Each structure stands twice: as structure tokens, then as C-alpha cells.
Image 1 (cartoon, rainbow, N blue to C red):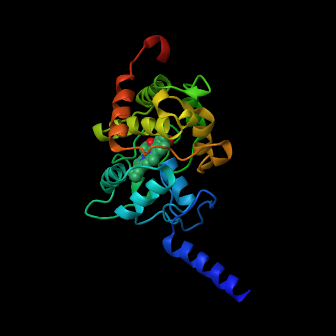
Image 2 (tube, rainbow, N blue to C red):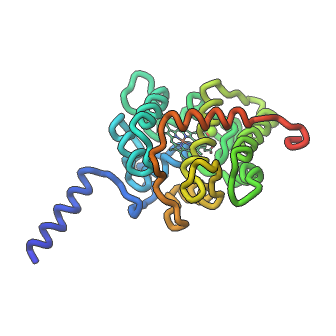
Amino acid sequence: MTKSILTLTLVVLAGTVQGQGSYETWHGPGPNDSRGPCPMLNTLSNHDFLPHDGRNFNLSTVKNALKNALNFSEDLGSFLHGQALATNPNGTTWGLDTLSTHNILEHDASLTRADNFWSNDAVTFNATVFNQTRSWWTADLIDLQMVANARLGRLLDSAKYNRDFSISDLATSFSAGEGAAYLMVFANNGNRSEGLSRKDLVTYLFENERLPLELGWNTPSPAITKEELLTNIHRVVNATVYKPELFE
Ligand code: HEM
Ligand code: MG
């Protein structure tokens, strides 16, 4: 009896110290926790893969979280950490709080957030914006063209209606990266070579900021590398073609 209590205590303590998070753990943000414009990173904090308070992430925290939750390679984890540091000039850490600064990585024409012109809230999911996005996902499986169309559709909408609209080169390629990311992480049957992602999984993530395990999602395998991300970013950019009959 005493032994089993001791074992249990040690297991609980180990979990607390490592703070590794798990697929089973999920709790939304409390009043003092920070969340940001990235639905996936918010999700990883909700699962405790990233610190639940959403602040002060360092390189090893980020690499471990992306590896343990999503099977991202070390080189991809380091690369993304490097990009995120731009939101905390002179710092060695960043957080969901620093990511929201407008026009560094956070940009207009998001898939699920209103533009800065309409609201300076880049954190809250916006159903009207998301309805626009998903109108471009015209089948249960989202293909590369639908990813590109959804991104371009949102960009054109912002250019047309938001008189403060601007987007940097960095944010432009970052937004292609966001499309590439959901295409890869939610690949149909986990098979990334087909280039199809499950709309129900992507929608679940956006709406719940929770990994869609209950819908049958599994950890990506093999590991997602920086090279694979960059290849898919190029694919999204190359598939971005303005066709008046589609967009007007
Ligand atoms: C959006 C950062 C990892 C998917 C964003 C945004 C930032 C960001 C700043 C907001 C851009 C905007 O204004 O819309 C990061 C960083 C990451 C990371 C620094 C890693 C360290 C991921 C991963 C995924 C992902 C692993 C996988 C699915 C997305 C998507 C959006 C997004 C789909 C678009 C949301 C929207 O437009 O409403 N990310 N992200 N991100 N991120 Fe992440
Ligand atoms: Mg945005």
C-alpha cells in the first residue's frame, strides 16, 4: 500500500517536473495564461506540451514540444524557434504573447482571425472569417489547390475591404507555411505523399484548439523536416494563381 502510494507520488512528480504534456492532458487557458494567433501552438499549450501559461519558450522547450506532439524534426523545431524569436527582439525566449504583435509574424488575411483594422484581437477564433476560409475547401479532403485558394481568397478580401491592409514578405511566406503545415500535419491516413488533408481534423483543431485524437488523428510519421516544410511552402506559392472567374 505504502509502496504504491510512493510510486504514484513519484510518477506524478516526474510528470510535473518534466512538464512534457500528453495527448490525454487537455485544459484550456486560465485567466493568467496567454494565448496567441497560432491555433496549433495554443493547442500545444492546452495539452501542456508547451508551458500552459504560454510564456517564455526557449529552444529546448520548443524543439521538445514539436517533437513530442507532432514528430517535427530537430532542424524544423530550431528553424521555427528562430523565426519566432523575431517577435521578441534581443530576447532568447518568445511566447504566445509575443507572437501577437501585428506585422512581425502575425499578419492580416488570417484564416480564422479578423484583421487588425477590424479588431486588435489576433487571439480569438472568428467564425465569420473561418466560414470564408472553409468555403474554399470544397471537398472532405483538402488538396493543395484548396489550400492555395483559401489563402488567396482571404488575401484578396483583406486587400479589398481593409484600407490599412499590408503584409510583409516574411508574413507572406509565413502564411504559405501555415497552409503547408495543416496540409502535412492532418494528412489523410497520415500519408503525406498524397497531398490531401482531412477537413474534419483541420476544422476540429481550429474550433477547439485541441488535437483531434477523438477523430482518429495520429502522430505524423515519419518525422516532418525543415526540407519538407520548405518544399510544401513552394508548392503552396506555385499553386497560388489568380483566376478572375473564381475570385470575383
Ligand atoms: C498561424 C506561429 C507552428 C499552423 C500562426 C501565426 C503565427 C504562428 C505567428 C499567426 C499568423 C496570422 O496572423 O494568421 C507559429 C510558430 C510555430 C508554429 C512560431 C512553431 C514554433 C505551427 C504548426 C502548425 C501551425 C506546427 C501546424 C498545423 C498554423 C495555422 C495558422 C497559424 C494553420 C493560421 C491560422 C489563421 O490564419 O487563423 N502561426 N506557428 N503552426 N499556424 Fe502556426
Ligand atoms: Mg493574423
